Length: 346
Image 1 (tube, helix red, strand yellow):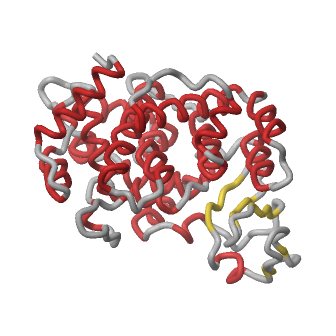
Image 2 (image 1 turned 180 degrees about the vertical axis):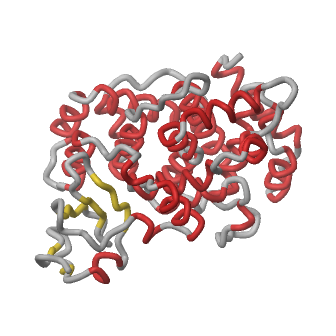
């Protein structure tokens, strides 16, 4: 039982017990100090001090498969929590009186957040306009991505700060693939999923494979085994196929688990969970359009194509999704070549 009532400072919503806290709230995440943060239905961030949320478990917001894996691995004590600097900046973002200069100054004090924001803004501009000139001003980057997306970029920076102990598969490999996927998803989404917010597309695509980072923290040798297997000339295959053959934990389920613990939005959790099987999700797109998860799945495969990794592609899924909006294989090839020509990704 909670020791005290909590009230949202913005909308004045009262929270009197577990049912109130779990209804129409989102993005639950623990800070390094073990304080629990969540987003009210109005979007503002609320904090529960350590010791006042014994009823809470991340499994409450996971699918049954993810909750089972979460409990099996006792993963909550293994994964790092959101750094204090991230939570401080998110708090500034929720304060409507925060001046842009104050926010920019706070971000500049955290090099990882600043670099992640600048790269994200530059990548989004490149995907939208084809201009790869870097955005090198924090103020410009904030204005370009907007405050809503900035909040999620700050969370993404926290994941970039987490260390994995792998020796073959590295964080650098992961993020290069992730940003490439974000590019293709942004292009596809703008053309064939106009009903989906642009920031949702980029973030869901960039973080869809976050389960690989979770695996790298929980069981680094397993990730290296998987990566070595899928790159072995004798066993070239997709990451998912390598996991099945080496009997490792599926990264899509681990992605949902990590995303729930770290407080990513529901659409990111769903992209992590379903990007290999978008047809299994309940989302439906308007006629002639793609769902967010289909856009993400297509972006992942185009990223592998652009990175000259054909054996990592699920070609059947790629062509099936593309066909829904009239895209032929030649159209996809043109997207890849255009990207490689502009980004010099050879």
